[in-house]
Image (cartoon, rainbow over all chains, first blue to last red; front, side, top):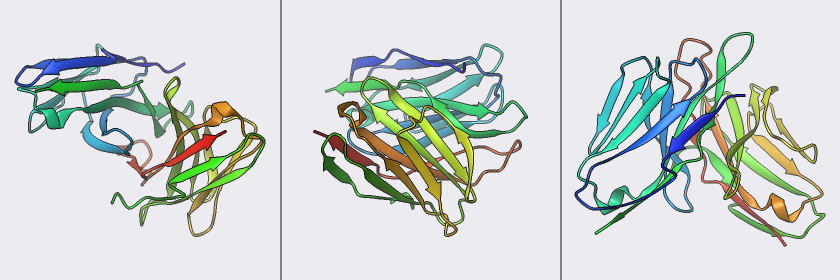
Length: 115
Length: 116
């Protein structure tokens, strides 16, 4: 069974601090996705990591992928209140006959950034 | 606006009843996915349709069914509702590119179902 595990699941941090969210997965897929969800809202795509060693950055968020370790990280630099949200990582659902369709999500990391 | 339209946004009903949730995918997307989000189970994949045909099934209960119509909109039918079915139901769509491309899903705003 495909597993996608995020940690921590809850994180409260102060503005200006740095922190990292970890995402471990059990599939052999070499692609990983990060999404953001604001309370009561939909999921918004943040990053798509397509290969081993991929690094993507936008603003204070940086995501990386290590397919050998089956690990992705989402690093937050100098956090600001507007980054408070739930962050999900996801991997491709792989079919036994090859190909991928849809995503399997981790449980999400609920991030609160306090002034 | 993501381009994926879901209706209704909110729905309150009683146990034992049946409801239908509707989804219009983003223009050009052939795949539609249904997910259920609840506090205890997280984001659970229910079912996927591609160009009118069922493509994959996840943790979908037998009381639930779905279909995708020729115009590519999709409906999720939930019957014999129980209290535990209360959740946020998301529809997402994508351009399925098979093995080679990324599989970015675009989500709708969701339908919040409350079963009393």
